[in-house]
Image (cartoon, rainbow, N blue to C red):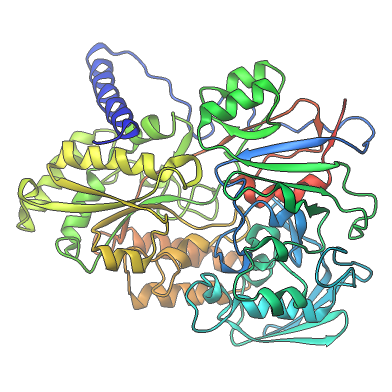
Length: 567
């Protein structure tokens, strides 16, 4: 392995295998933190005592903090900045898993194919925007939502999320009528801050900068903070000052300023927290106890994380088009080892879509089945038998494994897991692996076709506890934005169509389970579940009103209107 990071992970794989051998020989127990096993309360309530006061600056660090992208061209979330300067039609309470009013204060379905959205009156765009402080109107909602559906432009990655919409119509100044081709159980969630691609901007800005909103001149909405254009250093940092005319929630925000930083390495984030240069960031599992002991507010994504992690298999390219080879790769992954090496023991074993109980199949249901056995030797033996039956000699076969670039993916988990998977597949199955890094970190179907990748390690797109089937539609439906398995399967598409059309929650849940079990069958298996790490977050002890982000900082930037400092 060519770089230092790969060498470190490979060393951890070897060390872990040696440790497990020693455990087996000596009967020593190995204690790892896993789902529900952490002694600390990951969801402990955050400090909220005292009377809110205005003033002060908060600095947030993340892997994409200083990067601002076009919000309407994302199928998951978008840059932290948009949560500060603009609003989506609805808000979200991540802890409760409920939708809340925002620009839209009331919504109702007169029938399954019609939705009426009633805007809150008296909410204004920022004075610095091209709207020059005018009121937010139904026409702005329509213009922004229509832009997301821009036809013929593949850069609008979330366009297909709104395929069930027939029309948007501004009935009057404060009412939007949405007409559907088919019922859509996800639509309201797609309008929430959890799916910040639905950011609402002035129609004047879209008319002028519609080709690309990732320019500072367009970064003005109706949000609590206003861009300081002189502060913007692309990919490094950007700052926002209090919006003095903010009126969605009068009296907010409390802070004078919020600064976003791009800091890639955990060690640098931890040093910044300890030194006072950073107020909020995610930290490594190993550093979390130290920050708790120092009095920092702590929280994790253990009880809110939905997005899964999986090894996609290109079902169109030999030898991966043979289900027996896919079954062999699936059995060749040691998920317990992967959890320890990549997630530092703090994570969960994903079963196709995610780790949230109730909606998703859990590890308990799969215990003892191929690929999930405690005795990994049996899985390896079966994997070799399957390869032999398929006529594949792994020692004479090279598989191309694509992975996101370490410098750009969130917490480097995609890259780290890709490196670990490479080590396992080479070590235990005997394949030769051509390790290919996607410099743009796109991992899309187009990239897979262009590079003829056999395997791709990626995270499912998801929106916390609200858009529960985002991992499904993005990765396994034929037209999904990240269908890196190139899985074109009518039954999967039909099951998804039935599931997303079902407005009865209990019936929808049963369909959801049916899809997951179908994708895990030996004769399907377009991707092999791996593990998903949970994130720890640490916040300045003086901060009040802070809540744990749902699954990464970007989709919780909007909470900082209610944060204040207790000096």
